[in-house]
Length: 252
Image (tube, rainbow, N blue to C red):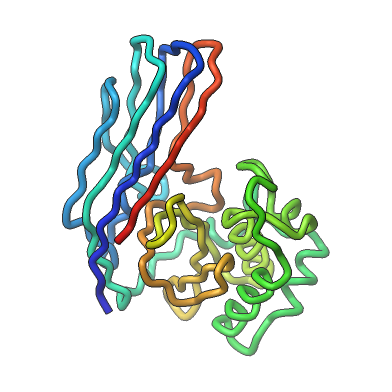
């Protein structure tokens, strides 16, 4: 089944005082393959020089810098994507089989993962997705970008990034390759994270935050071993300034 989705991403960074020598990497252009094709896409970025490239996981990145002093930084990415949900991505990078910095399981988590092993990998994915959803509470601002899967697992709460890290860690502990996915979702005004698990020769979707295994209205921006591989916005600058970031996303 195919669906066409319009998207608009806007990020505005306001600084408490002027900054300069600002370098940045942005992931705001949808991932492209036969299952997700860009029909239209354009960006507006405040000042500076911009280049387009790919990272090590084939995610599209925009990178550049602004040398002049400035107190705000605005990024807008918008366009239209054709999603073909019948497409099966069959390429497996072996790196997704192993624990990563933010997504690894200790002995207790491995016992948790093994207690939900099903008769097939698909049943295991279903069981673990439901278990992560049922045993953890979604709580905004309870974690940060450096929170590990183990920290979120023991706290019993977190956000979509944490739910995804816990599921990825459990799947890998059960011998199922898994990767972290970030992107946009219809009805959500902020970015979202979910999981893809590899078995039966191709990648399968799972959203542990919502406990669903078949997504509609999802636009994939990037994937990696965990969230640290694919942040939407990362940068450095010179200047003693605090940064306040406002993000708004629309998918329809």
